[in-house]
Image 1 (cartoon, helix red, strand yellow):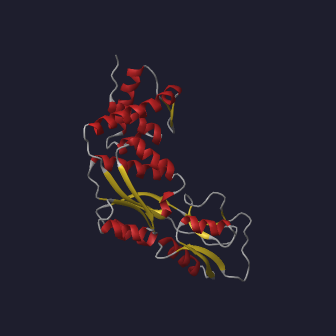
Image 2: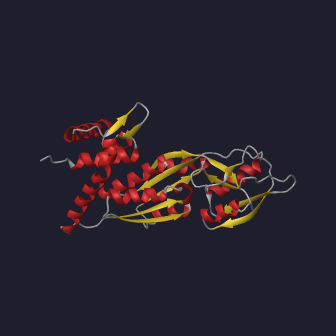
Image 3: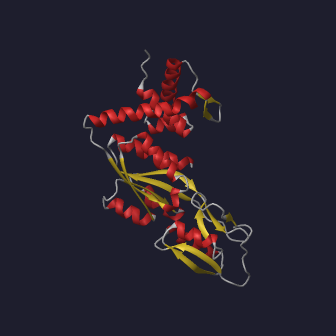
Length: 287
């Protein structure tokens, strides 16, 4: 009877989810070559190629696709077995900026659960400044927040900061929205203090474009609804802009917005919570 290596199975699931040996290695805190070796050994055990590899992409083979759900169930059963012996449930308290979350959040949450069904994830969505304050007050174990270009020195000076990726902001509006000459640009913004709001207003002021707030929302969903209703335009990250809104920056003669950094702050040391946090960070980077 063949006995599968659980570490190899776990590596396989990570590569399947992330479509990358390198990112899977980061999640498992090992190297790309070590992950590749685990997969080769698993493929040798199964007698099947699990991935189709090209220099630019990694995708499941037919055999890999057929094996994936069974692999997930195997890992789930392993975690349940540990739990039945009284293994303590770990907890991860993480804050996530609304400007970094995006529409893939349900899939990311599902991925965290698949990775460790016994890990309790306590996730808080909000504005970056508020989340960072909660993290500094030790109400959160980690936070993933947004820093604008002029805030780079602030996070680079912190030993607990890790830059995850850089993301642009764009001016979005409802399809067919037209800017009216001679009238201040109507804006939908998040209630302050909000770094994205500040950057948007500063950008307009530098370009000598008159503006007025038409709608102030308490969350991205509210702002998106106002924009979709045609009440205003808004500065949003591409990933969080509601489906159906369009980039109107160039067409409306609006100045380009600067890019900003998505940064992870963490003091997590517990292995299971740390592994889940790495999966969340990688998932955000590729979504």
